[in-house]
Image (cartoon, rainbow, N blue to C red; front, side, top):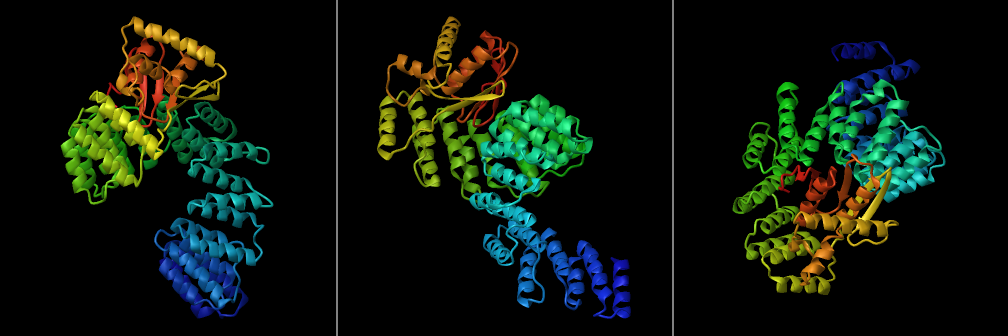
Amino acid sequence: MLQLKQIHAQALRSTLPNHPDTLFLYSRILHFSAINDLHYAYQVFNGIHNPNSFIWNTLIRSCAQSSDSKEQAFLLYKRMLEQATVLPDKHTFPFVLKACAYLFALYEGKQAHAQMFKLGFQSDVYVNNSLIHFYASCGCLESAQNVFDKMPGKSVVSWNAMIDALVQFGEFEIALKQFVQLQNFFDPDEYTIQSVLNACAGLCALSLGMWAHAYLLRKFDDNVAMDVLVNNCLVDMYCKCGALDIALQVFERMDRRDLTSWNSMILGFAMHGKAELALEYFDLMVRTWKFIPNSISFVAVLSACNHRCMVNEGRKYFEMMVSKYEIEPQLEHYGCLVDILARAGLIDEALDLVSSMPMKPDAVIWRSILDSCCKKNASVELSEEMARQVIESKGGDCSGVYVLLSRVYASASRWNEVGLLRKLMTDRGVTKEPGCSLIEIDGVTHEFFAGDTSHPRTKDIYQFLDVIEERLESVGCTPDYSQAPMVDDLNDGKQKNLRVHSERLAIALGLLSLKPGMPIRIFKNLQVCSDCHKVTKLISKIFHVEIIMRDRVRFHHFKDGFCSCMDYW
């Protein structure tokens, strides 16, 4: 900057304001000063007579790319319109929209969109790409899709922006359909593959994720294949698809890692119940590689402590986050610590922590305490109070609360209350969220609901369930009726219901269809019940198969009659 200021001083002394070359000279000075000193860039800008659109765009872009002056980008744009000496061009709008997207400034971005139409840029591919990103960032997926659909010409960036928007909104299947359509016009690039990998992670589509990985290695050079952002997506995808060993291989082979790389791997260890490895890698990240952990890092280690009942370690890392790294705890951190305490049976301490939180507890925190009340056989009265707190936090009836409360009543053999609760649900129109399990076989995903009879191989599946039932009975397995439906039914009725839970149907299809030695991977939308957990352990031993199951909370690795969670989930 010292040399640049010297050049600027020389230019002020030796150039004429209206000379044709002067404007170009000052545009270069502005460009380089804006990169290093935005305040000085403003001084340069204010001294330029009749700046052209390039000079306006240079300063708007620098504001949009800055960390603390993004709002100035739109104010400069507004000033440009008010002075009316020069009109915005097709380069102006992407910079303005980028700032609006970051600030979630929907109203201002819509004004820019209107100006874009008035100036005739509605067909410009670069402007439309920025609009897609802007609307998606502001939570307007329908508007983003509308812009994309009306574009007369699209680039691979247009497709990438739309696919990424769909992934952000959890529309993973639609995103993958868009990816298929993209290939009719363009070859995917590394940004496309990142979005596809994120969609695969959301859908737990391991086969497609492995295909994307293979495509990446086959089609791109080492610079792309070893790119840190691409590899972060791979680590995340493999962890979420139940292939922790492959995720670790990708992580260990990375030439360069950033904080996100470490956080993804530690979170992967945590969700798979590998708490010791999660804490070991956290220590390695901090002590050996000298990374400073952030808020997400501590969510990861606290989750790891939670999945293994490491109460003292959980307290230690929470205190380390606050005292050593001066990170203000968010609701997620309090939620982890509350869950650690409650699940360890320290429900009173968990409630004390909730009462000392600087923010209002949400329904997730109250529900975690209710879940612990259910599992730790806490008083029915306390469970009822927690259920009331969940309903008040959600602002309405929640089927999950009724299910947990029914289990409390069932565990206490208070079947009359179970029946009354079912009637209350019916009267209020509350329906229980149906259990759903997915299993992928030869690249095809099969979906099952509890008691499902819609699968083409239903007859084979139910016949094999009978075989499983006989083998379970032969080793003395007895059902846990507290996990049966919320009705005062006969025991044989409850047992019939338990045996057709969605994960058991998926396991039966896996045993029928997969080759010996292949692990069965199940993905379930609800937390696995204690009866299915016990049965799955026995199936893994009886049929000599590894079963990897991801439920709403975590991964369970069943092998030789044991589960990686050590019966703590």
